[in-house]
Amino acid sequence: MNKKRLLALLLTLAMAFSLAACGGGGQGSATPTPAPQTQAPQGGGEATPAPSNDKADEITLWTYPIGNWGNEAAVKTLTDAFTAETGISVTVEYLAYADGDDKVNSALTANSAPDLIMEGPERLVANWGVGGHMVDLSDMLDDTDRSEINSAVMSACTAPDGSVYEYPLVMTAHCMAVNLEAFKEAGASKFLDLENHTWTTEDFLSAVEALYNHYGETVGAVYCVGQGGDQGTRALVNNLYGGTFTNAEHTEYTWDDPKNIQALEKLYEIEGITFDASIAGGDEIALFYQGVLKMAFCWNIAQQLNPNSGNTGAGKTVTGDEIVFMGFPSESGEPQLQGGIWGFGIFDNGDAGRIAAAKEFIKYMADSEHTVEAVKTANYFSVRSAAEGTDLSSIWVYDENDPALAGMSDEERLAEQEKCQIMDEYTKLMPYLGDYYQVTSGWAQARTSWWNMLQRVGAGDSITDSVATFAAEANAAAAG
Image (cartoon, rainbow, N blue to C red):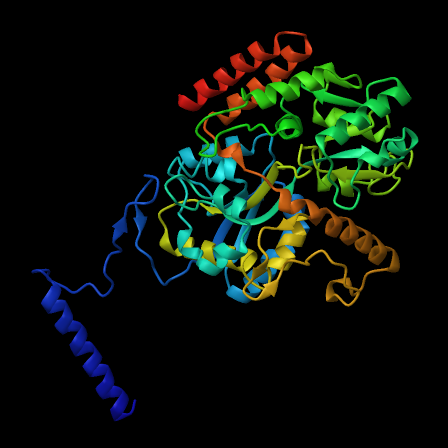
């Protein structure tokens, strides 16, 4: 060792012992690294260590089946790239909706929750977030981020106290669909705005009348055997005359609005629409694919891309009729669509290093040049227009020079081109994404009360009384 390095080392040691003597408080020996201070977390969970510059070199992610984020091979491609760039390894567990919530709740009870979880605001914000289990991610969002992220999405990911418990990645808008060939045959296609995929309430009612007059049977079903696909029935009723499902503050259910009663009365009385207590949303889709129903109220991009069991190709019935997705009818022709939002949350496990590493994972996937791959893996739409200078607004425009196409066969390229064309066209519905009211308290009971109410309406009970009874039931759960 040369003299300069030796002198520097001696000075460093002298300073260390001097600082220890000044702050030792009578302790017999110095402590090189102070014990981490703690601060109370947002939402009242276990104490969270103060921020640390040290990041863990491994983290865990649990993900629900959100597009190909439920596909192990697809996710491994993403996590391997993340590990290669950051040195942080990711262990992934794949959840099913049937028992995923139970697994998470059991892990929370046992203090063994994962670092990261991927799902929607009704779980990450309204459930585990307000329950005090999640890390507030507000510090990850600057003014530019907030301007780039869809405002309705940002609102849904934010708790009433301003804490952000979900960093959003993708979204979609639920819609309805029509059998275009059936509409043409019945002379009802003139009521569709095929350019914008929208229509008015008047046009919808005229189309139903034309279809019924031509086919002489049910053309659309208000399914209500259970809650499956209930986003479709809610959107249909709310949009027809401009009713709402909750108030803007998400503290009260408002489906006893006279506008919703008017919509239910119209749907009940018009020939061609049936309240069917024997089917759920999935059953309705099957009947629509088979051509039995001429319209479906339970639809989204996943169905539009589905080649169905008839193998007739995406956007086709089993007999090859063209399926056109449509926004729900409204008086103005501009619907308020129910949406799906998915992103990442971090469980507050009291380890600053793992939290820091988890935040780096979120930044990599949801706000970087890599966000394109993360979004496309989900098979949905980006919640933001750009990410760190990368334009995401045209993410589904087919580019024959895209390096991702290298090595694909001609058949695979053609399939990718068709998918991109469908996805790009579907983006026309994204501006109609409405309020994400699924974060309202008492949500589980509200869903049950809704389909029970539809059954009573379909059975011929007083619509006004049925609406009042079941809306009150939902509000009792929200207040409790």
